[in-house]
Length: 312
Image (cartoon, rainbow, N blue to C red):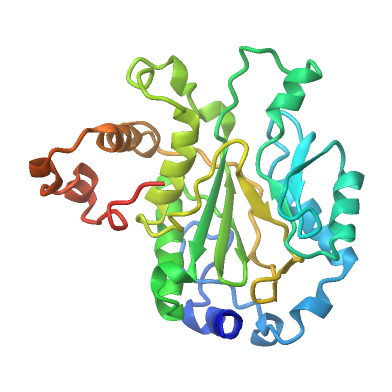
């Protein structure tokens, strides 16, 4: 019964993507109007033959497309991969060919690639020094239909609001959007040169795992706290589904709805520093019974609430 519900959710999602969002979103327009491009036909989004359509050639193309987002990082490889054949366990690959073998060996089912390189391996092979501090230069957002009561219209509204926030807070960024089967995945590379080393900033030094916190903050803030609260991304656990492979929960082919325009985004200082600091202070504050009754600082400022008080 669970499987039937998931399949129905996927079909409703893909069939309503074009209807639920205005077709006025011009990837190269300075006047951004929210919605998805009408270039995705409803027939393309139908899930009837998703699994059979996930060919090896398409999966390799999807891998290359995802890797393109990471070209600004320290190194493309080594990087971790996980598939249905590995039972979700991460395996380190040192080149594209080895990644393709894992994808092929799993019959393109439940294939994930890490958003960040394997920094431990880079340290072991001498590519980085022990004092190297990586920057969280990739925004990865998971919008799950469950967070919207499996209501496709509400999910699509959540996507539109997220894209609007990305445009405003990341200075006009145009991210990639994937239909994951049960929602949307959004990928937006950031300009690493525009990001500070938070560990070196006096206001941020007192907080632990500051770069991991920024990854989680970015996802939560850009979605108005509507992202999947179980999506607790970190350096070692930030895995993204590879386009043109199969999400076996439904089953459904992971489809590219919108392509990143190739421009790394520069976050506004308000988003990157001020609001992030407020988020950290609020998260680390030991709320008393009286304080819990008060509106959180971000709710006072922006008028939205945390998702059941849950941070991720």
